[in-house]
Each structure stands twice: as structure tokens, then as C-alpha cells.
Image 1: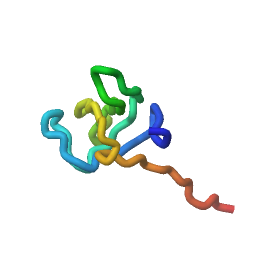
Image 2: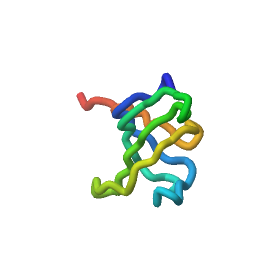
Image 3: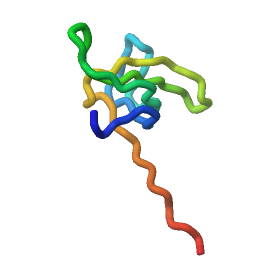
Length: 78
């Protein structure tokens, strides 16, 4: 989880039917947590639709289920 931090934008790679989420849904990491005796390490992610309305939240413990989006600004016009 060194690569994913709070406020990073991620895309869901695997359906989460129990949360009403589908592959390709866009979300923001709202918490990164370490493992405890009761719960594995993971992320709490809030997913939104194209209008910014919350679709749901998911507890992601398998980081293979999300990918971090990387923003690279385009060329600056002269």
C-alpha cells in the first residue's frame, strides 16, 4: 500500500456486487488502514458516478481489485 494514499483516485477492477459497484467505477481513497488481529490491511474507498453522486463505499483488502490513476498534465501551450 506504499503506492496508494488517502485522496488518491482509483478505478475498480473487479465487480463488488455486495456494495452495488462495478468494474470501471471511479473512487477516492478516504482511508488507508493497517492490519489488525480482526481485519486485514486495506483501503476504504468512496465511489461516485459521473455527476459526483456517491454510489457506495467499499472496504478493499485486495489491492489487485483497484488501480491508481496517475495524472500527467499535457504539454503547456507556448
